[in-house]
Length: 212
Image 1 (cartoon, rainbow, N blue to C red):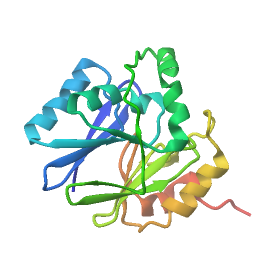
Image 2 (image 1 turned 180 degrees about the vertical axis):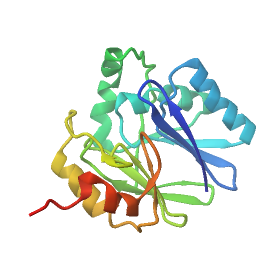
Image 3 (image 1 turned 90 degrees about the vertical axis):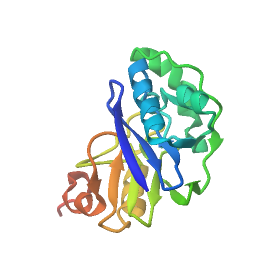
């Protein structure tokens, strides 16, 4: 499995293209908004001779779905979203106007199941609510990689003060779902730099036990 990261739009969202030896690939989050950003994605797909088969949204805040319509229509692929985050997708166009984004209407997403597959690769879906009700992380066990969306960042965690956010849920997702993964697991977040589960477990100030 190989991964290419694109840092896109004014929110500096990480859009990931993930592929394997089959040539099939998926997009994780669709942050490409400008023509230039869309051209960068299309050029990479063409140069690498990849075959996109799906778009997966870790959640549906506007900065992560602003490119859904472009990618799905250009490549004729479905998008997938956890059902608990459909409310955010419904609000995305209105929220986009607040930040200067004019969203094209994206195709209706398909329900996200317990895994995402392409070629010979399987990413397991981990429901990690808290940043939003339908936030998910995507875990590839063989190479030890987890795409955490806006749940876990290098040295930080996702905000929980947006509609559908819940700090208690977020902390449960972090401690009960993500921290039990092997320490060597590479963390690929929705914003910012890569890390590992071990580094976040021991160094992330939001994940340390409170002093008595």
